[in-house]
Length: 166
Image (cartoon, rainbow, N blue to C red; front, side, top):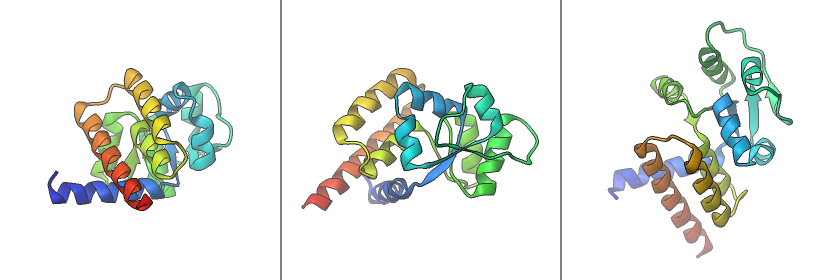
């Protein structure tokens, strides 16, 4: 792996270690529920919902804050506006929405990155990560580049964990 890429991956791993929360989309709630991760995610991270997401999801997962937004527009537009307004990352599986956040230079993560954050923060074991990762990839429709980035970050994270043990 080129040095520049390795440096970028190390920086991303540090961002995942420091992740403290975000404004969560319906799609990420669905994946979190499928993986039985919502209680752990809500315990470890400050997860913020907008009313439109609660309506789409059909319930208000416990320990998650609901924040009404003054923004107008589609649920995606309101979600991104709220994330920016609250200075919190956007948590979504919607590639188009994530690309909009990226174009605005706003932090954004999907469930794959949330699994890596939980591993980086010591909230799940490497074995749990492997199991959850496999379960996630059975239901998620990530582009090959997203899966490859996840693998590279996982490798960088495991290498850094091994370095901490030495």
